[in-house]
Image 1 (tube, rainbow, N blue to C red):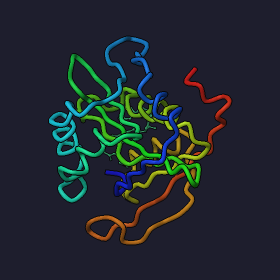
Image 2: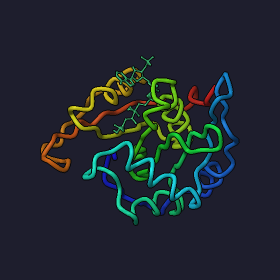
Image 3: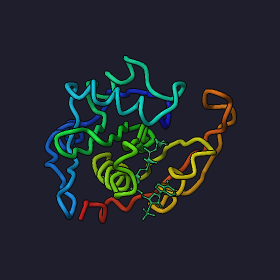
Length: 183
Ligand SMILES: CC(C)(COP(=O)(O)OP(=O)(O)OC[C@H]1O[C@@H](n2cnc3c(N)ncnc32)[C@H](O)[C@@H]1OP(=O)(O)O)[C@@H](O)C(=O)NCCC(=O)NCCS
């Protein structure tokens, strides 16, 4: 889990319709695809979170369900051989014109294939916000490396944010919406 979930319900109709119009995004060798996740993915998402995060960090039942079912959130899954192998969740803070990535995970057997990077890129497009933020444990070197290589910069630190007292690093990326068309 990257961050506590703050659900918001004041999205524009355009943002809502755009979210549900997304076609599957297919990687170059077609071994996995990126699709919009739905509530029926609950069991697989629950398993993915338990596999990828420590006990204190994976989301409880209601947060998982909310991530899959509440309106206006970005929810994308990576699918390989019919199975969910990665997931990213995000929300929009419409007042601040900012997106927040709330969770991102890829099953260990599918890591280092570019899946997280692809999920993050598609998520930024779906969010459609000029700024995207996320939080990460200060010790999570793989995720920090991913975010930095994807153009995120450290903007803040939240002391004792995570279970166990670890600091959260807050990363931010500024997006050129005119160019960020997924192409
Ligand atoms: C972090 C995580 C999502 C990365 O997923 P992934 O699909 O393996 O990432 P990608 O293959 O897209 O990697 C993109 C880049 O991230 C960095 N990266 C990813 N894993 C890394 C690792 N183990 N060590 C160092 N850098 C790493 C690299 O820069 C990599 O580019 P490269 O492969 O060209 O060197 C995955 O390791 C994971 O699920 N970890 C557990 C859950 C977690 O910590 N999520 C983040 C919470 S904030």
